[in-house]
Amino acid sequence: MTARRILIVDDEPNIVLSLEFLMKKAGHVVESVTDGAAALDRLGGPPPDLVILDVMLPGIDGFELLRRMRARPEWRDVRVILLTARGRASEREHGLALGADLYVTKPFSTRELIRRVNALLDGERTR
Image (cartoon, rainbow, N blue to C red; front, side):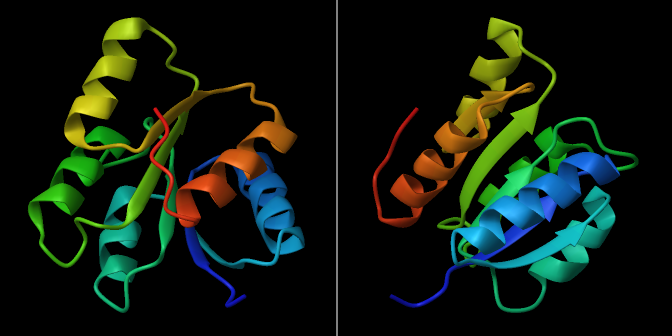
């Protein structure tokens, strides 16, 4: 199996370290950035297979970044998991309507997150 590339976009260092560890342990190649502008710069290269995206980011927030991703043909098929402390139903619906493949609220089960990441990367659509 070829290692999948995952981009983590989160401004909380502890979350980033935890996610990097989990994803690398699962056999994925991981990059991380701390804001939406840096994520856009990174997406300008070869797109990752999956983006784990926080909603509350400095500058360009996760919802806006997702909107921009889905507007670009070369980024439309990149899987996106919104991982956020915002748990209201309206925010979840908004994220999914913008094109997120999955909306996960913090705190989250690491085991469940890995399972869902792998399912998305294997082509399953889970909402």
